[in-house]
Length: 196
Image 1 (cartoon, rainbow, N blue to C red):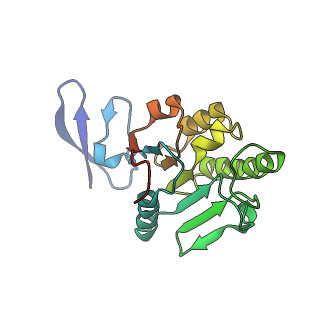
Image 2 (image 1 turned 45 degrees about the horizontal axis):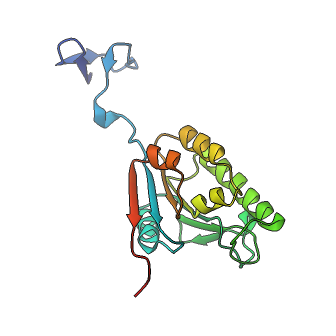
């Protein structure tokens, strides 16, 4: 015999349903499943500052998640210089993939070469998010890529709205668009304007 708990929506009363073990129990309309039986919903976290900097504590979160067994992707949109690109990703341990755009240096403005490199990385990131390949995706300096016109804000919003429900996404960078801040579950602003 298999036992299930059912919550009666009208009375919020728990009752036991006894079914035969040779039948597969089905959940019908009107039956609410216990919250612990639902998939855990992922979060959208934003880390921003008044200047362009490296978010060490965000990297710590990515490393910790990978250490706990979660598949993690770190994508750096404006940092290049090591001829990486989507086809030369760095695998750090079993669970952490680190990728930069395939540009010969750091990007500080819009050029045709920068646009091509960021487009290639953005296409790859969209593909792996839609394919649900990772539990945590960190998109470093995506806000500046939007600000420089290298990535469309509308495309980012669409991707965030269509992401797999259990996926965590972290966005970093200054000048984060308000529409992204408004949809974020957590916004952290670093206010230190200089390093000691």
